[in-house]
Image 1 (cartoon, one colour):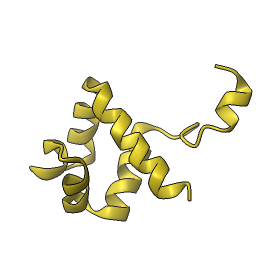
Image 2 (cartoon, rainbow, N blue to C red):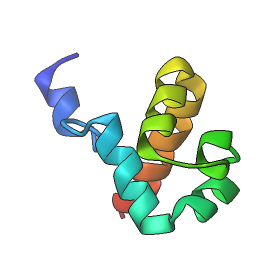
Image 3 (tube, helix red, strand yellow):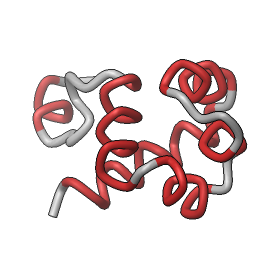
Image 4 (cartoon, rainbow, N blue to C red):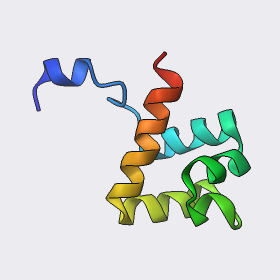
Length: 74
């Protein structure tokens, strides 16, 4: 991927842990669980359990990243 493409990427330089932390602080775990319906956000939620799930499931990670972009790139 070129530098030009990364310059326009709102996730460039942001770790998955940062994204999950920002979303959990903005929405809270209950709202995240409502919006995305992932058990890692509903049952005993934490950043670590969320990261474990999201790293194994690319489809879920993409949904979390899209929510981050939609929320913070206004």
